[in-house]
Image 1 (tube, rainbow, N blue to C red):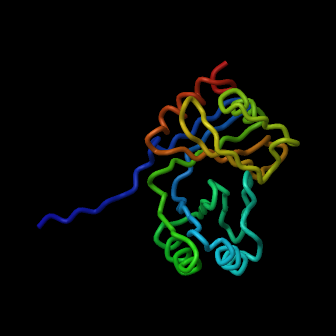
Image 2 (tube, one colour):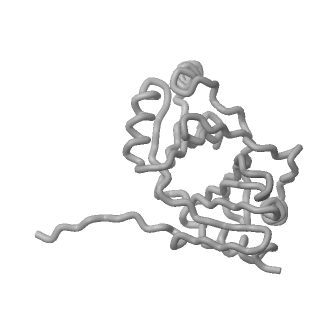
Length: 192
């Protein structure tokens, strides 16, 4: 019998594009899980979350980074949790922590994770996602679920060195990743 071994492939071929004022990079090797609160279990979830992370769950339109994990308020009664490494480890941890209050699903191969950085990174998002990326309206730790070229996208403003501009995490479904990539590369500073 022939033995097969599956291996992960990057949806966008490990895209890395640099230009003056911006850089776009596909982030791979990062597990992503959706944690959805079960009906009537919001308080139990909040308690389990606080016990695990020593903080409350993120408010809507926000994200927090705790214990090398980024937790994003992704929908009503749902958070996305991302961590560098294999999905199996993250899933085991989350299923243990939230077994009584939430349903955990592996989203690692269903979403593409892009890092958009640089002094003109906000310009790209203001043009394509129509969100105000000013420091006052969208500070570090902000999250927004919006559309970009008719494709759903979650945008998170992450901490970054000020001299290097801003950093945004973009999450989009794997099936729409090529469209989102095309839109970004068709916008300044990637295309002048």
